[in-house]
Length: 340
Image (tube, rainbow, N blue to C red; front, side, top):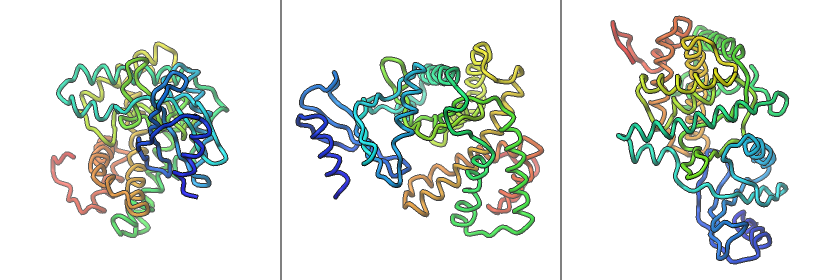
């Protein structure tokens, strides 16, 4: 039976009123989201969101569990109004359709507005991190960190660039992964949303931001979500601005007793090294989305992610071999005084 017909039948039985469906969004996975426009209100709402997460590719259970964790922590996550986990359907409260990304792009020159949105986002992040508990979520361990980075040679280098690494290049990559993991695993541990960026944060009137796409949350390095937010694959800010917003997170986080470095320069180094792991992973993911899933729109976001990665590798001597490898892969000749 067609998934949308199945979803409509479930909604008819659940809502027992007339409604229409429009596409709300499709994310990078197999999940799809529909906005349910109601004839009458349901639990005080005029519109709802229906999630279609087809089993066996998707499992709704983590979404349901983590939504409750975030709500309990005081975040503005969707409420689960009805569920059919067997068939992969959820009915959620609607957090609107204004993403951070659309609003930031629309008001690009209005830095005070951006400042307010990022301040709200870092405050919500601190709230989520303060509610962290060990043994509730999967651990962001070395195996997972490495598996994510392995997407880069598998999909970006082999499939996207069509290059086979020689033994020396492979050794550079392995050593870089090990160096990054060592730093990341030594960082303080908290709840990690894992995709905390401008496409998954909604501008809301009350308790801004609305937080979406949290089903892959784990327990891991404290800098991860801040890197997702400030070194976003979909919108670029000057480094001075990134540092300013990082300080505005770090000061209250430290004051609240979160496990961040006492010294900001040490914290920023952790932030950048965590970023390198994420940039490596994201390049692999974007290549896979294009070559495996036919989602070529992500290719246009690759150059920004590569710029982030190059900048970090250029700055730290331990990551220079990775920069040289990137130059070899992309046929870039290093020049005297050349900056990326």
